[in-house]
Length: 371
Ligand code: NAD
Ligand code: GLY
Image 1 (cartoon, rainbow, N blue to C red):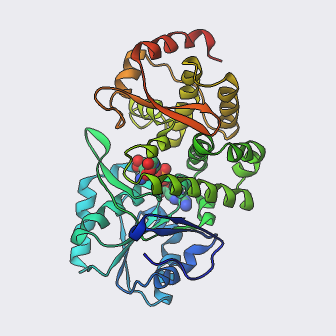
Image 2: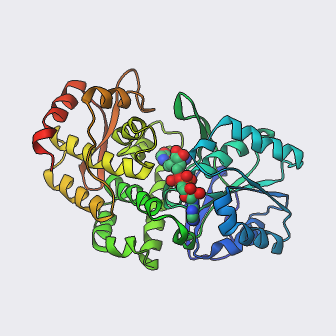
Image 3: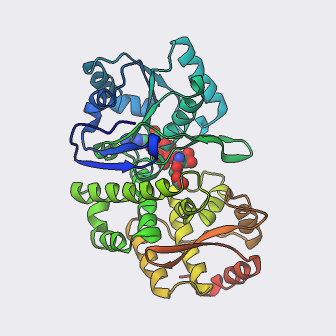
């Protein structure tokens, strides 16, 4: 895939041979989307997949940018929310692409957060056995995580993200200005994924987050730019080494073993994803300390940072039985073993199978030590 020609403010390359692509971190870049597509050599019809919230906020800007660059575009707007991440909505979008005679040369643009990105990527992977797509990510979760790395897919009634494909985009365009319209709760939830990168891969970045968390929460532009760029660099480097999650990529699931369990126990209503990941990281670090893998200081520094980001940290009232049962449904379970990402230090993690008895013993003594 060709590289972006125009010099942009922040460019991160995802190195995957012929499937390599750029992540352009470009405040205001939405107005340049058409030019980006032109730079990449696209000339066909463009399908913009979005929802009514994003269509209202940014639809016109995107359409005008595409028009200026000579593209014909067609907007497909589906209802907002996780409930559209299903095969039913995949079929709906495919119907529209067929009716509008989209071809192999056409391109799809995912304009939205992780829901739109995962769904659009999956549609792109199956329409005509694969057409190109571009991620224009508009939430913090999507800008630092879901738009990069090619995990696409939808949910099944029996499990989240169970149907999908590894299918890389041709470009990821991150206009950090779009984060300004995010609901506060969504914005804060994304910070859990940001802290995750410091914990799994970069202690200097973690220290940066400690020093600048107040600026980041307040969306100070240079701090925000650094955050998005560094997270993308880390994710790009992990994905380049292990695209299909046969090993290293599992570290990106830090906080997700307990986090996913809490999301599912809360029936996906009590917590949004980032909030559950924040709590998951706090308690997976606590478990790691109990297992003798990391120091108390690691647990305390991380919990303080999660709190300062405005995220919840407390484990809700759950029984061990329910928690363990929910953890057993995690995608990382292999041959009945629950694999968990456990910190060894700030910036260093290990992925280990959990011993049920040891986790139960840790859980039982939490009542005494919980603060
Ligand atoms: P989301 O896509 O549901 O977006 C959250 C809400 O914010 C929605 O209501 C959306 O309409 C709104 N929104 C988005 N951008 C906005 C903006 N700029 N201004 C105002 N409102 C805006 O949620 P999300 O957290 O971005 O993504 C969660 C999804 O991502 C889940 O389905 C999860 O499974 C998936 N995910 C995928 C990966 C991956 O690697 N593919 C990684 C993490 C999460
Ligand atoms: N969000 C985890 C991954 O992309 O692997």
